[in-house]
Length: 184
Image (cartoon, rainbow, N blue to C red; front, side, top):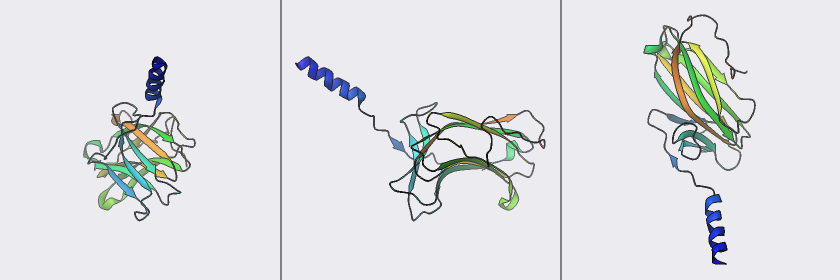
């Protein structure tokens, strides 16, 4: 009888969901709410189910139907990428998504003039990790590059393993969408 109770208790412990830790975003990343008074979204890092390392980024909606959107972004100087072709890649997934996710990149010039902007809105909920990559020609007038992930509506989006790579190509030639290219 005691063996059965111990076995049942052990099975219960092994099958119980593990509580994920939620940590703040690294200092270089910024979290923005389009309607701060609503406070409908939270963002940070979690160790629940990362793609490549120990943690991944997330944005999640709170209870009820959120208004506006939550956005995690980072901006950096374009100096070393000017006149080159840049590939941005990342892995993402969504959980219980009833809203939409947007993966975006923007290149700014003098006086915050938008020189190029690209976005990708997945048409289906990505229940498992999915790769996304796009290529951008970085103009010589570029001053800043910004990247981000946006959640609008109910659900959770996780993102991980973001990378940049300078690739061979002719700056100025048309950029063709990758397998997971832009959709309007």
